[in-house]
Length: 371
Image (cartoon, rainbow, N blue to C red):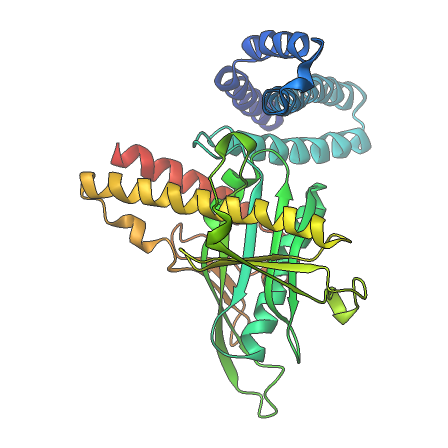
């Protein structure tokens, strides 16, 4: 085996061993046995909250164990592959091994970043809302581009998305998109996307081909669970129904089944139109409202803690976080981590893992420095 590859394999093995230590693989296996016993008990679903908590945690633990075991198996196979290439002086086998090493290094690196997610809500699914800033069609088109970026990112990973709200704009783009990323640790992964995203480009809507700067806001919150119940008084909400419309302008159905709920004390407005009936849409919209109110409660508690500590950084949560420049040069730059790339087309097509991972590492380092 070539010395440089041996060194690479040793480093990668060290990273994987570190992940196994952090996640405590033996303890995970013990936990899975206990969870499977609980899941197999008669009458489990008599208590739906407990059942959801057990089965949800069991799904996460099973996935983590399978992932670690798969990586370890691939590491062992890779070592054998390099030995074969060396013994037989086979350049084809060596190239195959190099490609597998590159793929495995990237996958294990991504998984290592996930082990840094230890916040209270990091394990949750994520609710994401994209809203255009001022600027009419230009901003609405930018909001649609961001939606496509996150949609393609989820598609690349095989993550399930559930669209709760889609407000089509008149000329181009969208007025609002609300969707749920249904995968464990979606919130911890996407929390750093929360904030204002700035686009600089030659506007396709300007017949004089002038350069335009526009903004869109991305709001990311952890999805509410049944155990997080926030009481909502019926007197505090206003419910409106309207005709549904889907992406591209097509009608979802021909009845007034879409539901918009306004929470009067906070002026939070949510809507849902992806279900076929008004009752289903109301139930889904209430879940979204619960999630928004939980985040309000969390931020209020955080503000109190920050006030006690004298920490003013929470006020910067909604500020500009990232620039996407398409003219006069090509660059995407995160203003917090200073990570930048010239691959703007790739980023806008969903290749945002490196941006996300750099931000997670930066947040972890910043938290440790503050501590």
